[in-house]
Figure 1: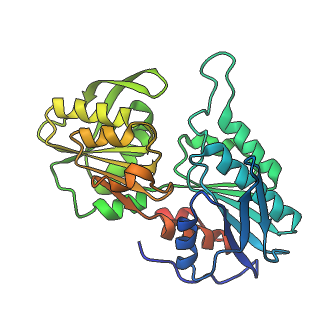
Figure 2: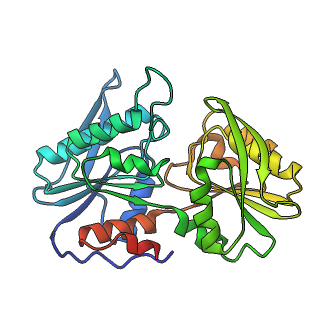
Figure 3: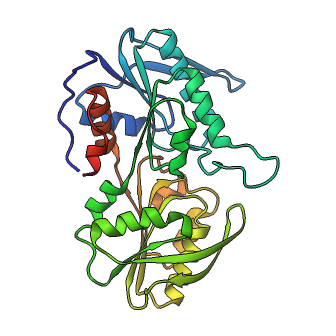
Length: 323
């Protein structure tokens, strides 16, 4: 994806982008696309783990964007985001937009058992209370999370980044696969953009992080499959889905997911599987063993987020980025 043109201020004459410690490389890449520096801030910890944060430049009257994924360590990174927003609010920033490439707690978006919290809603309320005026999110686990906020939410999709990558890598023998019924809309949109057929894995989840693939809806026999999901956590769903596709006669299996959570045994499972390639974005930085896995391909969402930030800053259309 081509980098956007430098920002031209319309409503706000001062654009600033800050970041915390979750994904500073992504923030730097966004600023590089926009030909501007990352805002100066200090994020440290006391010996007991308490966060000490200070904004080191004037933001009075500025249009400020805070880039922070709430990935692992989730609670620490979430607290950094809240403190940064509060600091900017108290420093008289005119508008504060929380840019959240990965929204933690998104999988807890409903009360499906007795006496459980709706954690995604609570996080939304905390971000609002801290002082955010707007949220820019990327591939929320469930689109209805946008309705948990009482402030505007721009929900970006990672699809354009993946479409650019796969456009010349598919043929009439390729099929897009949804790993479960809940991801059908996402997989269908992906398949439509590439003019490919769609298949669905009927999956039964027995408990958290444990999934059992049942059977395949659609024709995958003798075909190259691309499984499309929003995130990969322990890779249990991914690997079982690949096993089900292979058993159904699939020639090859590749996977696409915006968020590379990769917790627990994820990398070991991927390396031991028949999955040829796992394509993810840099919404979450790779670390540890995942950086050494040669099956993982990382695409950057920095140009996409930079374009969205520019559009918001100029009061333009964000939905136009999906045309």
